[in-house]
Length: 111
Picture 1 (spheres, rainbow, N blue to C red):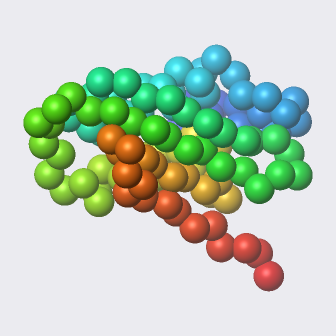
Picture 2: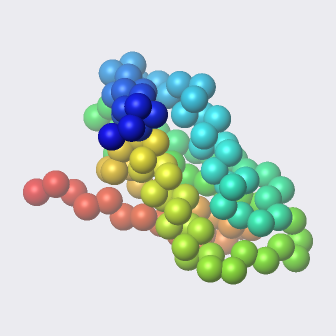
Picture 3: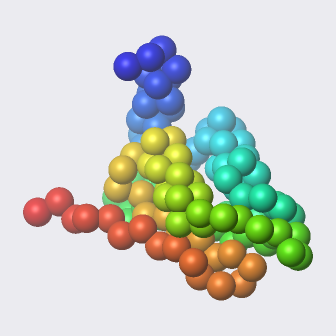
């Protein structure tokens, strides 16, 4: 594990302990849609990452009219993976793109 990966893991642990996310986490969550989607216009993010809750991150993303995003499924999976790497694998991620729900990751419950 690289030094950067170790720092990200440590920040995730601190989020769990403090029941709040850091500015680092917020900036990354806000930046991800800009990276993964062509024609990004704006996004809002709703999340619950508090300890003991069913954790989720919900994106509502608006794109500029006429924007093309080939391989959309891969873009959505990359966003999901980025959120899970930023926090932990048990976070559910959903995406609403231009008012239409296009993605929802289901988290497997530990049995």
